[in-house]
Image 1 (cartoon, rainbow, N blue to C red):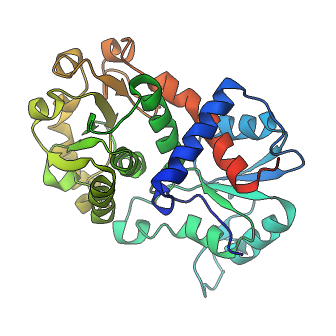
Image 2: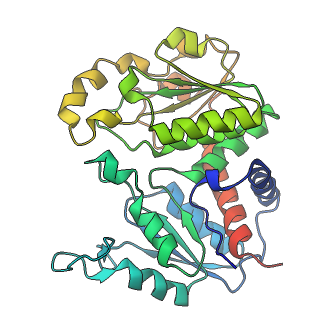
Length: 335
């Protein structure tokens, strides 16, 4: 019997996603349980975290399980991921051993590993999480690599709580300014889950250079077709915001400039006006606003937007705890 991982929501049907969201809602109503009693989880953090680490550790605890946090290169040995590598550099052990040994200790492995931001042709292969899934003999969860599927579920749950049926709701995924280029993971994931929920999705970005990787665009078009929604790209702020039911903000680096960020910087600097503010939100259909957090206030969105009743970013952040319980319980739960 093959192992079921949670690496991307594209591996899950709409029905399976709905079932996870229903279970997450149940955990939100009744937070404690014993679904993970006697179970253990290894949380592998190659990058910093606040919400992800806290929600996974507490989620395991709330369901009777135990989580162990490891940071390779800090409190654990640096890991090599290349097959056939001559390991005479900084890495001390290979993923082939790491994943198999951890699988003897724990029931689940969760991994957070951002891209290197030097070569998108390399980063888009998502080697770290895929290597864990290849060698592990227990389920593996993606805690954010080049996608962020747990954030997707938290976002979808928050939207359903406020809007009910999401089919055909107008959803704007807008790029926002940030002083440095960021991962495309949350943008990729927002596109995937909004189209999977049958929403009419507009990807708003300054120029065609900021359109997301073709793989995720194609997944989005496929999801929209299968679930009764739509997907389009816009560079027109007013047109995109007009009549929107949801505005979701995220900053990300332009893929053609990966590893050449000084060349991208002038385009980014000229696009500070993409900030989410009250004037733009006034164009929406009394729309909701959200962000995955952390958010730089008055850079990505204004204080007025973040403090408005229509901002559901805190609801979404809370839901990380509930959806991750649902995912862990679905993979290794009992009872």
